[in-house]
Length: 261
Image 1 (tube, rainbow, N blue to C red):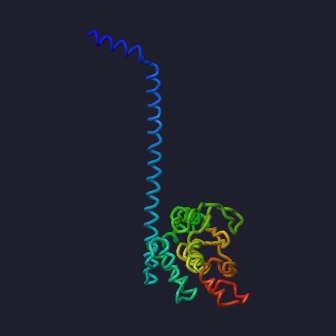
Image 2: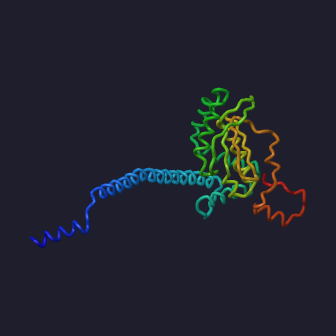
């Protein structure tokens, strides 16, 4: 007993217990833990959201690519987006520009139930001089097509009647144009077919204005395209592999326009 008492006495004197310090340390640890637990669900939610977006992007990419493959009758061995660009190149082979455009329109139509397009054109497009339909398709385009074009936002555009409407979609840097490296692919498999599709099959006028310098693109739903479109006069991109071959084989200074635009 004396030994135990001596041990206890030495422990109290040599290693004093500070109840206040223990409490402050415990509170500090609890605060750290509470902060961690508050941050954890947010991080998990962000990760889950990114995963869901990745899944949807993959689904949309495969769906669109499969429709292109059915139209072309050929598929690339390359996976993912690179394979999609290969199929887009093949879409233009052995076809005139007009044939390529009509093939692209058929691909777009195949992505929607036929009845849905007809009902939209009959019931929605006439409302408020077409402004409601333009607003709706702008938002759907911005939400559902970033996997194809990259980051994009809804913005306001000027309409022919002098008013402005948030029925535009601005693509910061079009992935499709950047990866294809071709004015002709942009014009004939995207710009012109998309304009025709929305006008003829959904009743919504659309003007697309690609910028071949910075690869941005402005969608203007509710605006008719002009008869004299400057996109037809664009030269080949410097990075276009077909243009590089043409420059090597042809030295005529006047031959600068993209042959497929």
